[in-house]
Each structure stands twice: as structure tokens, then as C-alpha cells.
View 1 (tube, rainbow, N blue to C red):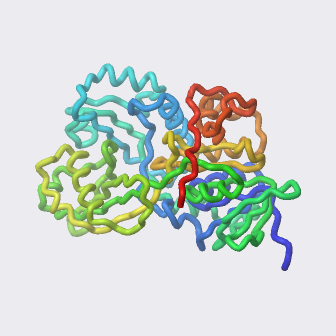
View 2 (tube, rainbow, N blue to C red):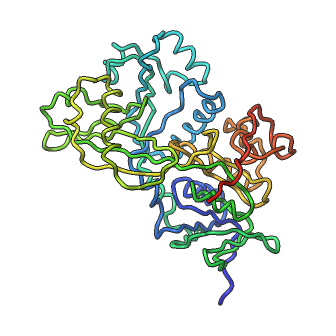
Length: 408
């Protein structure tokens, strides 16, 4: 048997995150090998053609709000022509009173200028977005075909090696390098540095080197509905994206006058079944009524025309895990992207590349990464004593400890 190839940097996983990181490393003049269990890029959740992107503007964690703003600007810059900028409207929660001045001040406090986010009353929203609800207009909100974007990032390059149909089941450190092994313990590749961007598969892979991460799957089903041109729904369909309890893209009118409309998504925590479910379509019809504030709309008029089922990966604290694994030098993680794969991939590409190449932290500061944000994403946040370790930057977040292994 010939000796396995050795590479300075190997990226495991060719979804949107692994592809973006590999591309960033190539842009920085590095040689990269990307390896994936599938026969081509973006075959799992990243085969999604209907993902949306916008900064988070809810009342969530301050770090999440700051991080999604940085990530959005990075994503917008990275994907250029593939960025489908149709704008996204976020309606006011029905139980909340809308105070336009208060919302405008809140957006300003998040560092969101009016060219990014603006508070609209119902009349203004109807004029601009065609939706008679108060809320926030994110004019630069967009959607992206993740499948096409991932494949474009991995187009042929003299410093890029792609190894397909090769599942990495185990990692092992030996003689100063990392060995990437298959299910039968054969060494596939060796590397000085390994970036793991494999969503939920990160969990068993990390277990092979004694690291337990609190990752769980979340199944999501998007529904593609057909609406007849003379149906009352046709007069309500949005010409922009909407993000609230669920989300939708702008409706598309087809040549025969009917409409095609994508609405999602179910949120089935702890499930990884990729089969289509009628119950998820029913749920999405209810989401559609809520997004358009059209409770009297007949759900049966939303005729099923297709769907997309994907399994997202989330961490216990709902933030992504991005950064060097300080307990295992040479390993870098980019996982738990949840439903914000477009944003976190763009952010991960900058952060992981800076760490892999031992860049000065000043580069990250210029991009908007404060020390507490880097620490909030770091894998070290999940381990006892992590916040006291010299390698961990200051963080106010309470560490989350991995749960004890469950009996099988």
C-alpha cells in the first residue's frame, strides 16, 4: 500500500461552510485539500436553494445580535452576484405594541444604519413591501442558492485538491501530525492542520479524539406551494421575503399566471429523518397564514408542488462553534451553524483562516471581531475551566458543560 497523501491543511466537509473556508485559504495563497463522504460538494443541508440571510434584530443575546451584523456584512461582500437581494420584511410580533421611534432607536443601538434596517408602520410597509403590517424593512436582506455557491467556491484551482467519496470516521495524532482514518481504521490522509466542518457528523468525529460536544440535529422541511392566479391568495402574496415565525421568499409568477411560493420551515428538534412529511406541509401552510396575517386564507389553496428537507446542527447555547480546539492543537471546528449557514460560513472563513495561519488578532478587530465575540464562538466555552485558560479570551457567558454520555 502506498503512503497516504500528506497536506498542510485539510478541510473535512464540502458543504457551504467547508467550501467557504477552503476558498478563503486559497485566496490567502495556501494549498488546501477538501475531503467529503459524498461524490460532490453540497449534497446534504447545503443542497438548499432557498436560504435567506439578514442580520438578527430580535431581543436575543447581545452577542448574537453583534455577530449576525458582522456575519451579514461579510456574507454580502463574499457572494456578490449570487446574492439575490430582494429585501426581507420582519413583521412586529402580533402581541407587541409597535412604537416606530422606539424600534428605530433600538436598530440604531445595534449599529444598523437605515440602509440596512428601517422601522416602518403598516402604511409605509404596504407601500414599500406590499405587506400591511408594521415591522422592520431589511432592504439588503437576500437569499442564496447554497448549492450553487458551494460548488462555485470549489471550482478547479491549482492549489485545491478535492477527495470525494471518502468518509473520515476517526482522527488520530501521531508523530506530530493528524491522521484521517476511515471506518476500517485505514489512513486516508495526513495533515498538519485539520478544519472540521461536518455539521452533526462533527460529534462522532470529535468523540474519536476524546472530545464531547453538545450537538443535536434539527430537521426542517420547506414547502413549495402552487397558487392559482384567480385564487384570493394571489392578491396577498409577497413581493419581498418575510422573516418572522417561519419565513418565505417572494412569490414567483409563472408563464401560465399561477404562482410558485416557498414557505418554511418546520423545526423538528432532535430528529434527523430526511423523508417528506404531510404534517410539515400543514405546519407550513399555517406559517404562511401567519406571515401574511391572512388567517382567513384557505390553506387548501396552497397546493403542494415540492419541498426540501434538511437537517441542521445546533449547539446547546444556539451559537455556532467556530475556532481552534485548544485541547487538541491543529484541530479547528466550524459547526452548529443552525439555520444561519450563509452568515456563519462567511464569518467562519475569516475567523478560522486567521487562526489557521496564526494571523495577528488585529486583522479580526478590523473586521469587527471583539475579543468577547471570538470567545463566545470558541469550542473552549463548553469545557470546565475554559474561561480561566490563557488561550480563551474574556467572556461573560457561563460555560456549558457537556452532558454525561448516554447509555445506548
